[in-house]
Image 1: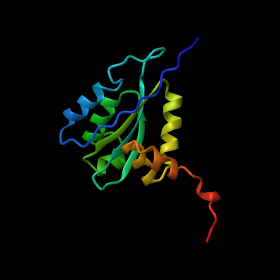
Image 2: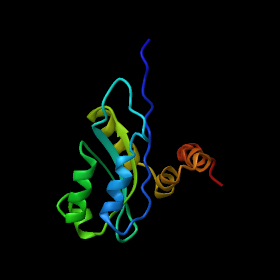
Image 3: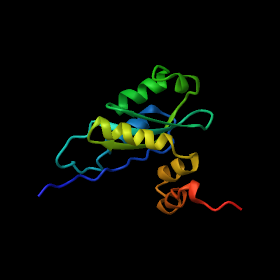
Length: 136
């Protein structure tokens, strides 16, 4: 029988220092080892200085956050520093991380914030297909 490891999410609250972000990353597996694979890829959501949300993926979350803080990760985050890590989610492979990143990039701001808060009721409500709604 093959056991599949659940994908755990990590929410890192607002912190004035990068050190606090690192402390949040240490608890990625919540003290439990993942069975069957090692976690090497992450999808994450940042809040930029103007309040905009930024989704990305990486194979080294701590390094990528340091790059965002230094302004060398992307043009968008370089112009809108400082950044704050709101959400991170581990993935077993690059393909699944990229697929999830693309999915998140297509979501509304409200839906991303519901994910960050872990509000499943709001997330489910926001997941309804907008194209099937009846126009008034």
